[in-house]
Image (tube, rainbow over all chains, first blue to last red; front, side):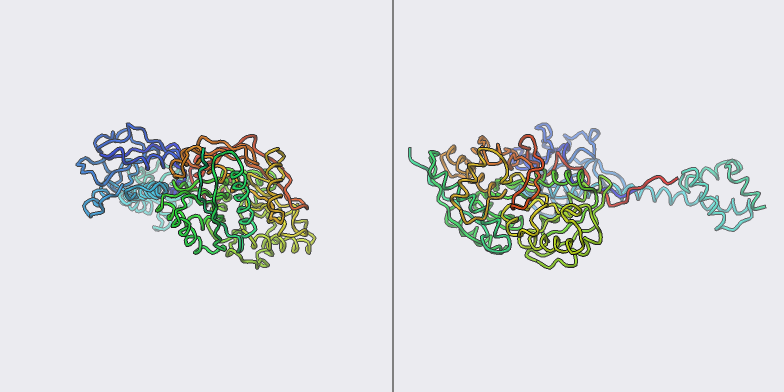
Amino acid sequence: MSEPRLLQNFSGARAIVVTDRAGSVDVLTTALGRLNVTTDPADIVESVAAIDAATLRHERDIIFIDGDISDGAALPLSTIGGLPPAPVIGLLGVSAPSRLKALMRAGASAFLRKPIHGTAVYPALFVGVNEYRRQQYLEALLLDQDRRRRGRRDVVKAIIRTMSEYNIDDDEAYDLLRRRCMKTRQTMEDFCKDLVRSTDGQGHGEFAPRRRIAD
Amino acid sequence: MSRLNLQVGYLFSTTGSYELVARSMLNGALLAAEEINTSDLGVSLVPTILNPGGDLGQYSVHAGTLLARGIRHVVGCYTSSSRKEVIPLFEKHDALLWYPSHYEGFESSDNVVYTGAAPNQHVLPLVDYLLAHHGHRAFCVGSNYIWAWENNRILRESVLARGGSVLAERYFAVGDTEFGRVIDAIIEARPAFVFLTLIGTSAYQFLRDFRKACKARNIDQAREIPVASCTLSEPELEAIGCDAVEGHISSSVYFCSIESPENRRFLEAYGALFPDGPPASADAEASYNAVWLLARGAAAAQTDDPIAVKRAITGQQLDAPQGKVWIDPQTFHAYLTPRIGRSNCDARFDLISAARAPVQPDPYLVRTSSRFEAGTFPSLRLVS
């Protein structure tokens, strides 16, 4: 899993703006237009509830949420990182803690101060989208680490079984298993899981010649 | 019908490390005012000229002075750092800065009209030319500010995407003239080309010293390690001196050597008004175009109100010395014609290539650059 490259060109993206003052976002939509980010009138909505989260695509959509609206609705967030389905940029009017907290809870990864200044839009997009992508990467990394942590039990079992079957020490057993999982292009955890769940653990080609060597 | 009197500020550093270019810019702006005032356009320009002397801190002082006098249109600034210094003042006073110089892009202020080249009109054409004709190993030398940083980023991304390499990026303070060590490093590294983003006196000294060092080692610098730049213009070629003037590659939307009736007329008028020079340059032409666009906009709007003038200029098309020039209503940058030139012994540029038509400005490179920054990881190849 490699770290995401920084996104610097937002051409082709779609902006969805959540605000109850559609007339006040002209500067934002003009600045987005210069970056070739489209904002259809239908994408300027008064409530988060008006957004169909199922159709959102994180690589295309960017959501701007006006922090001054009192909106009980919320976007679904991922369980581990609390990430929204697409990057969220908060539009800040009142900077009171309650409003900041609401935008943080909505998953905002960058902010634009109101009244919006056209030249601030590109930096907000750059930070907001790339921070979202970084958090997505960290979330995926965390999920993977968690899955592998749970698989450690099978790794321990597989090492013990291999030590016993081939009369080798734990380092040799680990090395044997590691080489085998690399050859089959599996993670150590997945390979060991398959191994301990097989009836005799002998169905993996390389073990037979290795046993002869051990003998 | 009475003529509209239009107060305009000219803010050019006619002294300091980049005075040569700035003096030619002022000349271009003065020539336009002279022509407008004797034309039947119905506008009389009244310029107030201030000189920040190349001192960054003086730009906001002088811009503030002009705006405090009620002047709502200022033509000026050369470096990006000076432009960024004064923009907040123009926003505060709802005034317009007419910025007549090529720059690195990634800006689109509502209070600025940009008549110089955007990066897709001079930086990218140069990168394409260098990679196609000179190779993929670059050595970057620049003045330590945003112009050089951003140009080098654009070059680096293009070079890496095509499997090439940037051997080094070296930066010097504006006005620095000590280049012995970096020249040794370049000769040692033997790049396919040097990408030069030094400005003013630094650039002239570098080119002189580099040519001399190569000559001492029997290296034909212009052919073997050419220097390419997006800034080098005719007044600067004269300043470099005849020993080192020939063979440098420059990317620009204007060269004095463009063959057209409009350019001949421009050069004749420029030469007659300023016989002592410095000669015209791309930035002089951009200044000339800026003043003409301002006057045309004010004439069409019948007011000097910046919003009305801005609205009115989007309908204007100039028969400029470089060819047709008009303003993109979305970004308020200009449609311009990219060209590549190579300097000759007469301190002019021979045209190598030119776009067929004016190119739409793309200040954020949304149509012309990769979605992602260049990867810093090495390209892998299959070894077995």
